Length: 191
Length: 191
DNA sequence: CGTACCATTGATCAGGTTCAATGCTCGTGG
DNA sequence: CCACGAGCATTGAACCTGATCAATGGTACG
Image (cartoon, rainbow over all chains, first blue to last red; front, side):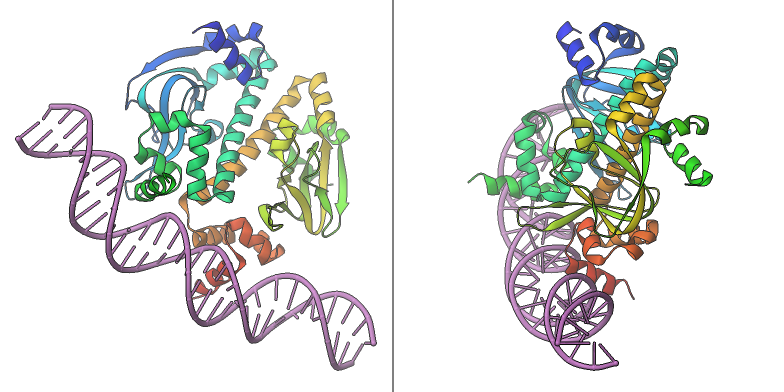
C-alpha cells in the first residue's frame, strides 16, 4: 500500500495522515478471489472494508431465491452492511468479489478500542456514517427523481468502471429493473 | 419540556442524561405555525431540529414547479437537510410545518463549539449521522423492494400518525406516485 | 463439440401516468 | 346565514413503460 493510497484513504475519512498509521495497525490487507464472499446474510457485520482494487457487489436473496444487487462497488468505495454494523443485527446483505480484488478491512471492536484510547477516532466513525448516508441518499435520489433509462445513463457517466467490470445481470437489479429491460434500454440509447 | 421528553431525546442521540443539559443550553424551543417554513432551498442548512409535537414535510420543487415530498415527519423525528448540513452546500429541500408544531432546534456552529470543548459530543454528531443514514436506507428499501401499494400499506402500518396528520397530496409524492394513483390504491384496498 | 449461462428479442400483460371531468368540503365574503 | 369559489379527492378513458413468459442467439469453458 503506497503513500498515495494511504493519504487518499486518510482524506476520505477526515483523518490526519500523521495519525493514520494508528489505524493501519488495526487494519488488514486482504486478497480475495472472484466469487469469494466477504460477508454473508447469516452473520452480523462486525467489520468494514475499503476496496483497494477490483470490484464487489452487495446483494440480497429474496424469498423466490433471486439475487438483487444492492450496491456495486469499485476502487475507493467502502463496503459492509452499515445497518447491521451499527445495530448489531444480522446482516441483510451478502458481499461478494465480482473479480479478483484487494481490500483493506478492520474489525468493529478494534476501532472501538481505538476510540476508547482516544476519542479522536470518533471522527473516523462519524465519517463512516456520513459516507454511508451520502451513498444511500444519492441512490434514493436516483429512484425518486429519475427513470430507469436516466439511472442507467447516470451510472454510465458517473461510474464507467462499474459498467466495465460488472456483468449486466448484476447491474440490472442494481438499477431496479429486469435484465430484459436493461437490454432494451441499451438498445434504445444506441441511436 | 418535561423529563420524559428530555430522556427520550437523550436516548435517541446516545447521550447520558447527566450531560444533556449542556446540549439544551445550545438548543432552542420554537413554536411554528401551519405553513411556516423552517428551511428553504435558498439557504445552507446550518442547524438541525427535533419535532416535539406537530408534523412537518420536507419537499423539493422541480423544474415544472411541482412540489415533491421527500420526507414526512412527526413526533420524535428530526429534520433538516443533512447533506447540506455536512457539505455546507445549498439545501435541496424546503421544510414546512403541515400543522402548528413545536420543535427543538440547534445551530451547527454551536454544536461544533461544544465538540471543541469536549470530544464527547462527537457521539452526538455521529448519532445524528446514523439516524440520517437509517432514515435514507429504510426509504430506499421501500423503493427497491416494494410496489407503490405495499409502500402505502407499510406507511399505514408504521406511521398511522402521518396518514392522519398529513393531507393526501403530500403523501402521494412521498410514496413516489401521483395523487390519482394513491386514490385508486386506497379504493383498491378497501375490499 | 456440447452444454450452460447470459444477453437479446418478441408478444402479451399489468399498473401507473396523463388528461379530463365530476364531487366534495371548507373558508370567505356578501 | 347562505352562496360561492378554490382546492383537493375521486373517477373515467386512453396511453405508455416496464414486467413477465417464452424463444432464440452467442459465447466461454469444460
